[in-house]
Image (cartoon, rainbow, N blue to C red; front, side, top):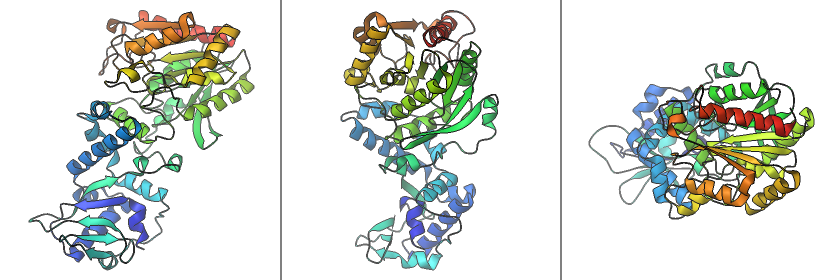
Amino acid sequence: MRRLLILVLTLALSACATAQRLTAANDVHALLVAIRDNDSTTFDAHVDRDSLKREIAARLVEQGQKAAPNSLGALTVLLAPKLADLASEALIQPKVFRKVAEYYGYSGRQPIPNTLVIAGSMKSLSDGRVCVTTKKNGPCMLVFPKPMASGGCRLSRVIFPCCALSSDLPKLPHVIGGRQMGYEAALTNYEKSDFTDGPWTRPVYRRGSGPAVIIIHEIPGLHPLVIDFADRVAARGMTVFLPSLFGEPGKPVSHGYTIAAMFNAICIRREFNVWKTGKSSPIVEWLRALARKAHGECGGKGVGAVGMCFTGGFALAMMTEPSVVAPVLSQPSMPIAAGSARRAAGLDASAEEIACAKLRFAAEDLSMIGLRFKSDALVPDARFDTYKREFGDKFEAIELEDEDAKPAERPPHSVLTVHLAEDGPSKAAEQRVIAFFKERTGA
């Protein structure tokens, strides 16, 4: 029964009012029951959110420094000031903890240890603290500091497996965002299927007829404005494929949802390359396989592909797949620049992928389109300068002014979705992209 303590999470508790074992065990037991029962009120009574926010920020800093040395400033930009606040709101919920426990193998049919069992697994430390161990004389899992004057034990440190594990990460369920709430109604006109290649399986939504175009959504997920763009592509005689890589399909964009999805995507490091220049994300291999499948089913001259923001550079890396003939890069934001001149000019594609694209552009008379708002700090001038230098006239740059954007809560960024205006230059940019797909795919 002690294993449930491991299966819930790797925890360390602090700010306890008493070091007596039974009192501490009562608090641990109440927390575990609240997680099992999705009891938010009891859960919140045993959680110190301010401390957890600091822990989340510290974990992201640690992981960012490992991924890109000397990038503390980059992570600070990414986190401060509201990222940790909003990420904690998304992550510090009993249902999220329950999902993590299930990831480790916990079943709701397993009994929770009673307080005597929990108390019996505790031992005293030389500095006056007590801790819960996984086995007799084993390492501490839960630590209670010296007695304080008031209050009960409250959770103040947590290590989420999305940032602590390695090769098994793809198995972790998507736990951020809560219940579906009917969001998939936005995809009513689409046929849904699961596509598997290598270690990844993702849902894919399909609509239309004619040659295929793969539309890779931006942060926070496959939201309604991405779907609207896909509808317009399908209406021009093409079959659109919408893979859902993160987030909740159909869920509308909001600030909190965006921050939570960004936190989750950055944590799933096996799938996405956030920091390193000259390297594509591993999930691109899955997208290449999807392109092969789509071309085999839909025919035409080849497949179009567009990525946006976090996925903005994926279409270039997909060019090693011969079926991809029309790559579009909408506000390609990776790798995150955040003060690094090297990353600001960097591309999220390897030297081999770039060389392959150049050869194909020349041999097959192909090209690609890149879109951005000129003021967008996530897509630096230096990055577009690199595209222009590497690909010359094979790179068609569409760069828009702020006044071309549809007004929104955040500054101009999402060319084909959030900041797409009803008319004017941004609408013309969208129409150019759709015409490019039609021409290259033979729709």
